[in-house]
Image (cartoon, rainbow over all chains, first blue to last red; front, side, top):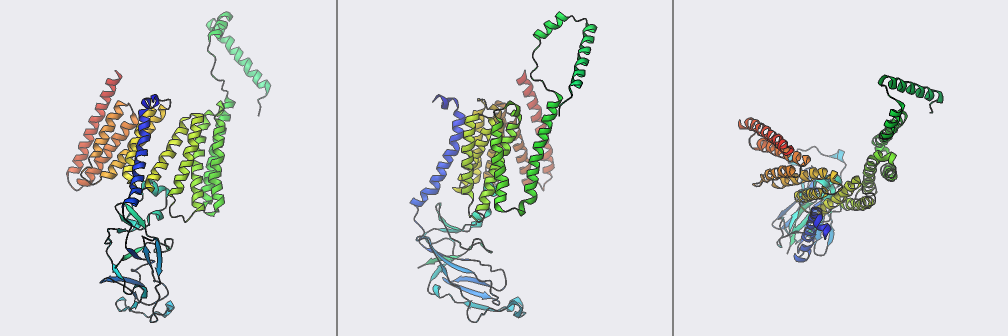
Amino acid sequence: MPFIRMHMSLVAGAALPALLVAYSVCAAWLPRYLVDPPAYDALYLTQYNESSPNSARFQVMDGRFSLHFSGENFGYGWPRLYRFSPAAGTLSEIPVTAPASLPVMPPYNRPVLPASEEKTTSVPIPELDGVRVDPSRVAPDGYVFTPGYEKRPSLLSRWLVSQRAYDLAVVEKYGYAVALPNPDREGANQSLRFAGWIVP
Amino acid sequence: MTVPSDILEQDKRRAIASMIEQMYVHDITLPELEEALKHAPQPAAVTDSHAAASTLIMRLAGIFMVTGIATYITLFWPDMNSMWRVLVTLGTGLLLHPLALKTLGHDRFVQASTPLLLAGMGMEMLGFFVMMKEIFPLAPDLRYGVMGIMAVLAVQEGILFLRHRLPVLLVAALFCCYGFVAVLLDVLGTNEDIVMIVLGMSLLLVAHGLAITRYAVLSEIGYGCGACALNSGLFGLTQGGPYEAVLLLSAGGGMVLGMRLRSTVLLMVSILTLLAYSSYFTATYFIHTVGWPFALVLLGVIYAGAAYYALQLRKRLKA
């Protein structure tokens, strides 16, 4: 006790970060036990690049997810579609296959057309027939989709850790966050594109 | 290389001749000289020109060796494989650190121990980071690795400090501890500005605590780093909001505290914070008005007044 009384500043200096760590641990762990897990599955795409020509673009209208391919199929521009169930923690890939009317052609056979006359082909996805999709970022149970690039890495992390740690998209509610798995994080167009929540 | 004995003998004879001449000039007798020799203080250390030259050459050799390693690493880094990269960084660190510890017991190397310890610790830490990056190049989150490295080094430096009680080892241990806590809080998702504020306050308290110990020499570093972290965190948290002026209160408080604790560094950091914030504030809100140059002139007058007041206060405190 005399040591503590004599070195009160040192003790307070050590206690301050310890208290902040304790508070942060509570803030990070308590919501796991207090907040209900997400109830709705998330639908999202990876390797999605709608700005480039000859690529697929998705649309959610009247609760229906549809995919259209704009231009010719040169074998690239195809995204990967995933359905993630946060409650079960399972990720399943929904196959996206080119229709018979859009065969792969070598780039040198490309017809010269203005962008306005590029053909658009509908890509059927049988697994999503009859599935209702809510495109808003906020799910009916209150969970919010947050893309990774919205997070700001701290000064120390910017020095010590690569930016990849912050490209992690999550769904969160009251501090409880569930990361959306992205198997294509290391490739080009690694960011994840959220399509919506699968609702009954 | 040894000096021939006949040259040393010549030097000695010349010195004796000179002393005899001085004795005649000042009328000094032999008993007087004996008496003076009895009461004359012993020289602390006999330093001859050969020893000085040897020390200089040793230092130059050290500088050349460190520069050589650094240049080699810089030039050939892209051509090295993973193992070689780890070897030149961590290997150098693991070689320098024990060497520095070995010098602690010898009075001859007392000046070399601190730079060697710093270089050894720096290279060891760098080596661990390189090893982590080379072994796990695609790891999604390296922060856990950084935390592990910081924890291991904090324990290592802490144990070394408890054994040798050197200020440089205390600085190293504190640096690793604060690094560990900062990365841990980042992993837990705590706001960066709040982390800076709390760690800054903690550093100020630790520096104040150290001021009454035998490591008082470190308190100025602590005050400087603590005030910088606290003020930058406060600025980040309040920037652009209604509570932005809190930074002025913090800087003012730092100035008062700096004068009370007689800390030049704390006073300087607080004044620089005040100056930086004033510049930022006027540049943000008054840059397109004629008032901005006038505001700058006014600020100059205020700072000149503050400097004059500080001088008067210093004179009064000295008196």
